[in-house]
Length: 109
Image (cartoon, rainbow, N blue to C red; front, side, top):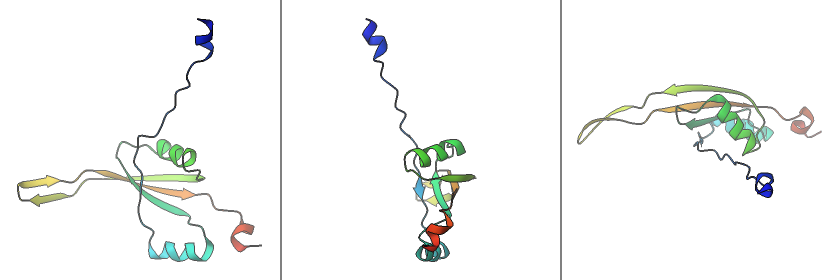
């Protein structure tokens, strides 16, 4: 029985959180084409997601260096359908500021 206490299974916490990347604006695409780096990204996610969870998922799973996370909650739009009124689901937008690369890497020096 002593061996079972030594070889415990370490819990693995996988993210149960959807992060949908909002497409880059034309200005952001121009900056990316010029420098190869984007300073800010925008994601849509569920309203229950916290800033800490979003930051830890982006750093842990995707390997991004996150500087700051700003969030905004949105109510779903009210629509009129064939069967009456309904509402789309609520969502949260997360604005992610990334840490910039070193100046030597951007300029190619």
